[in-house]
Amino acid sequence: MLKKFLAYYKPHMKLFALDMLASLLVSLIGIVYPMITRTMLNDLIPNQKFRLIIYSGIVLLGLYIVRMLLRYFIQYQGHVMGVKMQAQMRSDMFNHLEKLPYSFYDNHETGKIMSRMTNDLMDISELAHHGPENLIITSITIITSFIYLSRINFALTLIIFACIPLLLLVSLYMRRKMRIAFMESRVSVAKINAALESSISGIRVTKAFTNAEKEREKFEIGNEQYVKARSLAYKAMGEFQSSSSFITDVFNVIVLIAGGIFLYQNQITFGDYSAFIVSVSLFITPVTTLINFMEQYQNGVTGFERFLEIMEQEPEVNPEKAVEVPRLKGEIEFQDVTYAYDGEHNVLNHINLKIGQGETFALVGPSGGGKTTICHLIPHFYNITSGHLLIDGIDINEMTLESLRRNIGIVQQDIYLFNASIKDNILYGRLDASDEEVIEAAKRANIHDYIMSMPDGYDTQIGERGVRLSGGQKQRLSIARVFLKNPPILILDEATSALDNTTEILIQQALDELCKGRTTLVVAHRLSTIKNADEIAVISEGKIIEQGDHDELMQEDGMYAHLYNLQFREPEDKIN
Image (cartoon, rainbow, N blue to C red; front, side, top):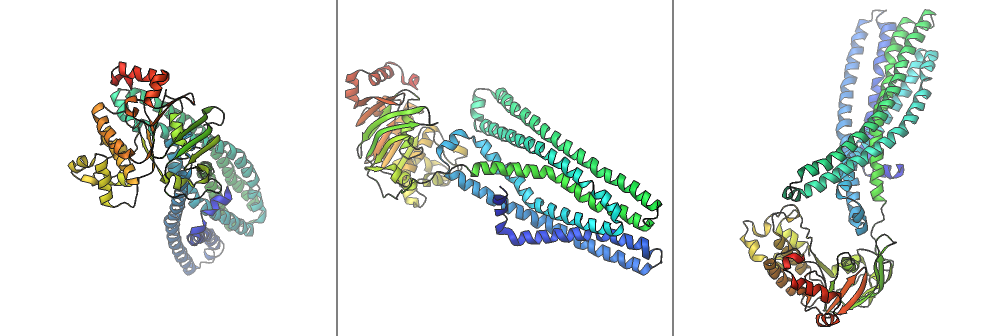
């Protein structure tokens, strides 16, 4: 872990070196005051060298001005270095998140991921800056203070420094308790962020169902867990600081008693004794700094551990020997495909089906039967457990992920639109498209006239997740996006199931236009929308139990016929 952490210093070595040099000079300047104090008490004042007293004061003032400037540099540029390292870590994490497979996001909440990218990285940044700085300043100060105090009185210095092993033992014992406690508090913060993200995203549902009190209760549960975890962390920190502070207080008692005895026995002069009392703070101050630094150290270390948990997740990689494929024709074949999300419980069992180039193939059946899973396997969002999935006779494991997905367009029921302009959302289908191509895609999706009726036209901002648009408008924007992409394979996953009948007609017209000349896989609950499909498969419990066109399946009088008759016996608004 240390090696990975230190790697982030590499691009900033020049600034890091200057920061450490400034820290070194600050610690060295700190020892000048007790040295001048001793000289004054032993020489300048007894011998009435008033001019040297003034000169010494001027020199000390000049050094303090220099130290002020050095501290400014450390605080300013040192923090800038930490922020740059934080930005690099954030970029690395974001890039890694982009490469992680679907399965990662199935098991990790957005709020918890965001907590690691914000709160955790902020603490890592503080550690990156203050960690080396504190270690250098305190180490040099302790060493120089030992040398200087030894020159005053070696025996008295040894007595004081004998307390260090006791301090180290306390630190090592308490450090483990702090590490565990601070990790638990990190987890609780992530839970709060996840609950907050979920509640804010669903605020409209909360208001619609007047369940604000329920959301407050859910949030307070996480909030109380945070208070409990943080209290345990501060308890561990309090035990550490109080114990350590007691040891540092003992230093003053030792200096007072041992120094008084040495002075009584004439083993030290009054001037040296006075200088020793002043100088012992040189040792106590860095020790106190280290004690206070422990909380920041634990925050930074636990944050970096959580950062590495994300970075060590296996990314989505191209299959071995995968090659870039050109534009595909669109013939799809499942050969004895089995898939299990958790590697144990099969979601699909020995699926065999073939979709010809340009055909429309529909999947129907009860929820949870495996229809969406089949759709997700085609663009290789998940790795099949066994069997083969071929497109144009080529196993998808022999294609690069990017070239495969470039050939596939997906329109889902749950449309995700970015908080950007209408134009930017359509352009997501093909980023290098011209304005004319964007407009043509919008026209083919039956959304152009609506866009032009808006004050800013294609530059209209649609809000988070397209909140300023209706369901039908969002759906048509997503269809325009696929029109712009122009893939040979199209997947429609319940694309019209959440729409009213009037809107559905408009969307269906756009979808019919979109499907022309493409191999289309349709998942539908409204069976009226897939009556004209070339082939229909009924999926239940991960198996194909019926397959044929509409007329054939109606004649079989099986599950498809039952579902179809059920829908047309009841009002459509009750079906979905």
